[in-house]
Length: 224
Image (cartoon, rainbow, N blue to C red; front, side, top):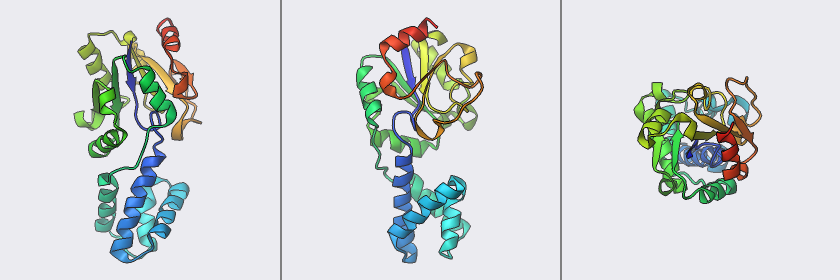
């Protein structure tokens, strides 16, 4: 069986990346407009909690009287280019070690530079036959598009039933590939762990953590 993993909130906790990026932005704002970096960081995190990601930089820059398109663009650039301080969670480390001899791929959505920096920071490349950032193939081929999974099937000369995708987000991770026969496992970690969708969107099997991903479970899935 061929294992394909999602990245964010599957192998590591994505909030780590957000916190790391916000610290870089806080230091940038501190240096540009003589503000206390710790206070700026706290404001960024508070705004994230209250308004979500889409308005964080706008709101914080406005609060310091320096809101402009140019300054927003600079903050976004700092966030995306920073060297992230992130680490695999223990379940992710154990899982990769447990399946070290299995063929494995990584398929992840997101900005190409950002996702590449995450992969490097986490030291993931040696664990996978190929790391596939969907946006490198065009945004239209991001999940739920099955494009990257079909490439893997072709490369491995494998039927979809021989490939299992492990992800966390039912909104996009499984709905595009289940009808084609790919096997799917949802791990209840990260920002989407409480989300519930219809059967169309849910995976074949749901587990609480990657500690539950074992060869025995995969054999049961293959017989499903």
